[in-house]
Image (cartoon, rainbow, N blue to C red; front, side, top):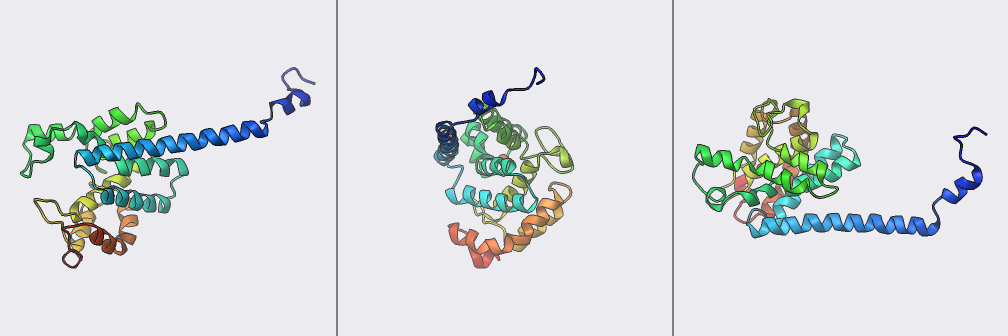
Length: 234
Ligand SMILES: [Fe+2]
């Protein structure tokens, strides 16, 4: 037998026992539970800053997963997509309320600070084991397909696919949602704007995938969103 081969007797002792397998399963369950708790805790933080509604983030996660499945993303990418959809704006916690809640148009300096939120989100999430990739996806959720976005000016496939998906669904959700200071756009106008931005701001493949089911989602969106009228939106 060559020197580098492990004897069969030793191999059997290396095979995991039932106890080992049970322990591995328990550790996997603990890791998964911890992951869910972290997401939940950050969502609460967004709620405290009034940056979030449960409905908004859950909706983005559902839309994102639908697009992700259709584009053939792998399981690990889908898990990151869920995190990125839920927590993409976590960095806004670091933006002053005077800017965050300002109803008027932001000045140049204010806008420059606002744009920092994607870097802030990345800086926080990257420190959590298991969230490093989702942190990168969050870092790039305001890149533009033509390279004119931020923070890195990435374009096309340089932009992580998860970031491209979050960019489209977040933009659409922002367009149709009502805010205290403005009414959400009608569905058809939001679709028109997505199509106008397709290939420049947005990844055309993602836009096409999202629009294939968007209309069927609208009744759910407006039924769940106080202040937004389904009849006026459609
Ligand atoms: Fe954002």
